[in-house]
Image (cartoon, rainbow, N blue to C red; front, side):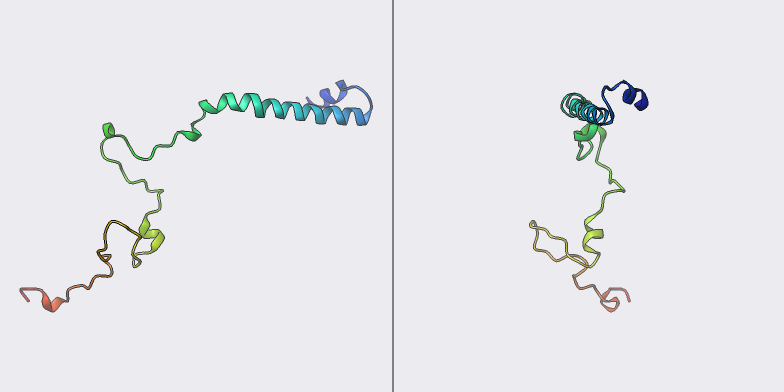
Length: 102
């Protein structure tokens, strides 16, 4: 196909080279400004769903999502503005001698 286009372009080597670059530029501009904007609404790239809807029941945890424990580590306190309570991993644990029935 490219050989056919090269043979059909007029003039010598420099004319064919200029014509080829012009065809590439026109084709790129046509795709960029006409075809792609018309195809964008049909593509699912902007269709972001944060959680499942109420009709589908409770949201299930996505295994591909990184949890805050894996980002901060199990011993670090995650950032929270809602509570001043210490993180469970930093609270003192009860010793075995303090448990009743021993």
